[in-house]
Image (cartoon, rainbow, N blue to C red):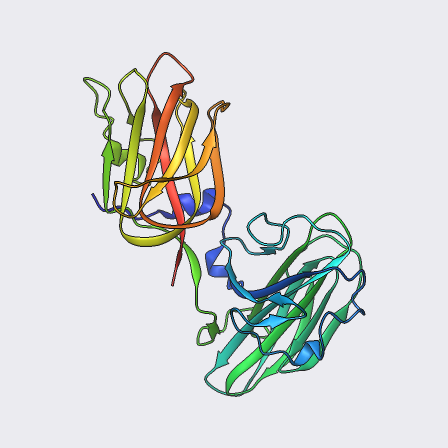
Length: 312
């Protein structure tokens, strides 16, 4: 059964995918420099970032997010840091020369260059507020380089950015490099170890986008359910909404051939409800949840099982 993630699930994650926020970046850091004024590498503002290229001893890497803001403290990016700086870079391709507005938010301060020219230097301690800074910019025809330097004084470390017209409407014909995004992945087929006897709780119902339908297994341990994505993807996040009959202990495994599996997440002390699991991106076609121990005398029952991945 081929299923596609619904708008309801997107709202559940509080993701405003139509808002035009930049979600794919080349990032570099962390640089253990306490202030914004301390240069992390020579001629910071003129850098042309490429994946794998080094600046100041650190490599630029591709990183995509599903949320409206980039979290530098994410464990699969730089991890928790204080009193340091990080960089985010993107190229914007415009079909013509045009005026635009760059809206940004940061935690803490931010310095922004467009095509090598500094357009904003807001060196202040603050938490993240989307669109807090507004800068009028001119995009030339073709590629435009946008570079953000974000200072972390302690606590959160975030960046948000989007480009709009002067009425804050998205400019539809802009293209971005890197052109990569995290997406809710389509599930082509579903397999399960069992279905509760005399029920209509088929495994496909965990992936149908309907929060009222569910899969339920027989009342025994162990049990499993497998999602076939149809092709290789970089799996990065799993969302599970359990019915009362949840798992106390389970693993998430990823495989390319449904034979050799790699465990990417394991827990032995869950209490049901909703699980949102972020993992280091793992390439595979199949995603398996293996229930080891039930939380109740009943089976394993899932309302929603959603998978987020990196699509190139």
